[in-house]
Length: 258
Image (tube, rainbow, N blue to C red; front, side, top):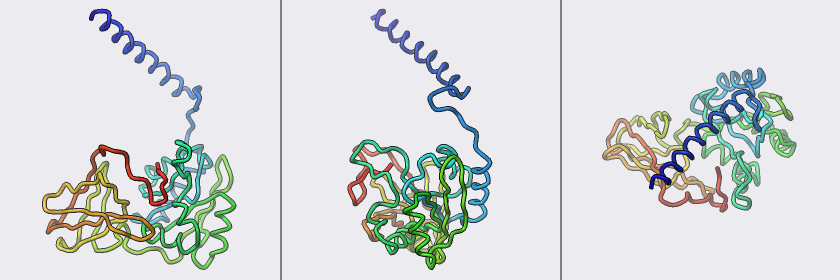
């Protein structure tokens, strides 16, 4: 028993020492993934997003962004701007199970499907860099307006605004306001007796934390399910989540999105 305890203590001590070394290497910018400061181009783009994307709107990334904006800084843009964003641009593994593209492939099939997806999720702006998607937006100038270009450590990224953006902000149906906190969605319905539909994807591990209120999946079309809320007479409804006992369901196309 003493030998086992000593071995465990040795492993913990080695992990602590190794962790300190790894932290020092990365802090010095000499590790395998050097630390980069946010470039002026990204800071300027973040400021533009704050001024031009509505607080209850969303910026989405067509296809992938890879590392073309600040070497991966795009992942920090929601924190830098206070705006919600949508995309799927992390890893290509497990191979054959992730699509590594956005929106889901059946929504990229036509202009009508892209507009439908924008309506479902309240997307007011799209960003893209791949020539295929640049051509897509440029050919639909009646629907999309080129409003911004940015370039940083990669090809030019263009931002397009919907000329007729979705109404309702984070609510597909109903009236009220929605605020998002860490691990919480807080809904303030205008009418505590009227149902609402939130522009957030339904997951079975979501739970209503407000007594008397309830939530359920809502079919928004195209296989997308959003969150329907019955306030049950409450002026405020809080929604949280708990870790699922089994893996999350894939999207309608069978892909697991990060």
